[in-house]
Image (cartoon, rainbow, N blue to C red; front, side, top):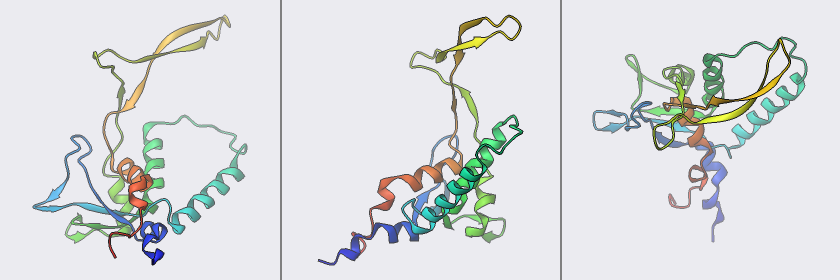
Length: 179
């Protein structure tokens, strides 16, 4: 039996087409009758494993050196999502940037088109989900417990779609059915 047809790492390197979904409705995005897709490299690819290793090394060398911890806003989370997802993009199908077809070099542009939106998480009854947290009064030093709302992402931005797709096992099953 030729086991090369089970080379999931080669398939992860080539990439797999991902149907782009509308960030709010989760409906497939179409160009007429053709699906709009982004070609996504899998996490098992040698390219992505090398990038992840380099990123971890860089983070470890910075650990403890950041003196000024700045306040983070949602744009920081968005930028981090885009930065993480961009290297997974190999190309596009039926996606244009203005009057030309989008290419892998347009990955950051594409990912920046949608932005994560946060909202208070609701339970099945429509009531806000909360968690109990300890809070210390700065003036008195007294600690008390309060209910704090739990937040969740209310849309599905492109960067999140790409990141989740790249990590799914189904995208790394190799090319067994293609040969």
